[in-house]
Structure formats: structure tokens, C-alpha cells
Length: 317
Image (tube, rainbow, N blue to C red):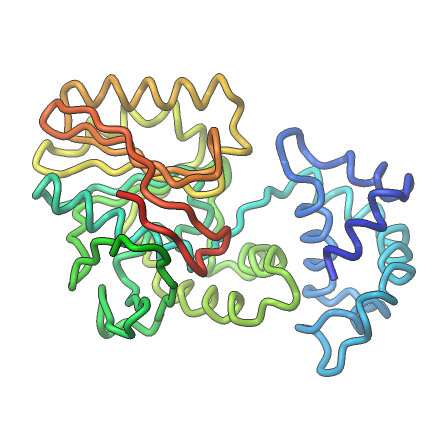
């Protein structure tokens, strides 16, 4: 449905003008669809609901939805503008932990230290608690937290078998950084995050709700603000007995190039005196990268090619 609406909106000056109210650096289509979805989820009544698979049992055809969509956008223009100006696209795609798990397994084995996790763009912290989930890949074997209610399934492709720790690598420190921290225990925040999940993706929504129950604020430090500038001060709090892992997925496309370069330089400088790694994608390209500094040795590697929602990945190390 969003694909259809995007193609129609691209040629509609009224809705293109409405989209310009999105904050600079934010992906306008995601934000516009999220705002509309949010208003419907929070009780706004409109015939548009009849096209949303998660809001009605027998949704009407997506190809017939544009007239209702445009009518909704114009009728609730002020409410949508308010959301475009105040909200951020902060999708918590839990299944991406499927390709993060072998990254953390790899780094734990490499450094032989417990991990200190720092996530930039953490939103509600669902990926920050990756070690609280269990994982299953091609052969059905289970890894990670065996008793977890959250099962993440993913497929690895290619000839190389990723490194999977039988048990989750130990995490001693956990920090989540974001310009705005979402609280999954707060109904409005939780509904906004749900609104960012596409209507047809029932499995993603179910996984999100299960993972949300694993977030324990007592087990992490959440900090609002510019994560790049706060990084050195946070790292000072972490003893050298831990391997520092800074990571972010599908966030860097919203970060200015100068700040991305500064982030990499900051981590490289820290790597001269500390064991640290940087796991990231969507920064300069779509690949999943690991830049590691262990025992003073710098190594930059492309870890994997990944599906955007973590359904599959091709391991390359």
C-alpha cells in the first residue's frame, strides 16, 4: 500500500507541500505515513481505516486507497504537520539483531573480554537488549538466551558460516543514545513506534511487542542528546576490562557527513588506547561494517551484506 501511495503522492503537489514540514534530515515518506498511521491507531475515525490490514479484518484494495488517503491528509493537515515537526523516524527493527548477534559473537571471541554496548540512535533500546533474545538460523539450532520469549529467525546465505556463540556473549555495560529516547512503557511513545511499522507487516509488529517487554531501564543507561559528542565521556566510565562496541543500524543516513567522519575519527583515536569496535551500516554504503581496534591493531572489515529488515544476510569475514 505504501508503495502505491508513494508513487501517487510523488505527483501530487498538495501532499508534496505537506511533506515539506518534515524536519531536515528526516525521510519524509516514512514520517508522513507514520503520522497518518499514528492518528488512525490513536482513534481518529476515517474511511482510510478500511484499507489498513492491521485495522480491519477485510481490507479494501490498496489500488483504491489514494482518494481516502489524500482526503485524510487534507482533513487532518494541522495534526499531521504537528507530528511531522515533532516526531522522528526511529524504527526499532528487532530482527536486525539476527545479523548483529554474529558480530558481537565475533568481537567477544576476538577480544576475549565481556562487552560494553553503546548504541547510537537507540530509540526505545530494543536492539540494545540483543543478548536477551534467542536466535535461530538455517539449521534450526537455537543460540543466545534460550529461555527468552523473543525468537529471532534469520537466514544466512553464501558459503561462509557466521560465528554464533552458543550462549549470548556477556554484556557488562549498556548505553543507549538518541536525540529523543522513546519509552515503550509510555502508551504514546509505543504507539508512535508501532505506527512506523508498515500495516501489512504483522510479524514485525508481533516481534516488536514481544521485544518491548524485554526492555529493562535498570539494565541500561539511556541518554538524550548528540551521541557522537557524548561518546568520549561515556567511554571514560567503562573499565578497560571490557570490549567497547559502538553500533548503529540504519541510522547514519540521517547523520550529516561531517558528523559521520567525526564519529569514525573519535573511535579511531580511542582505539589507540582502548579495545573498541564500531559496527554500522547505511553510513557510506549499505554494507555492514566492523572497524575494530584490539590490542592496538586496527582492522576494517565488511562483515555482511544484509536485508534491510534482517530477514537474511551474507557473512563475509
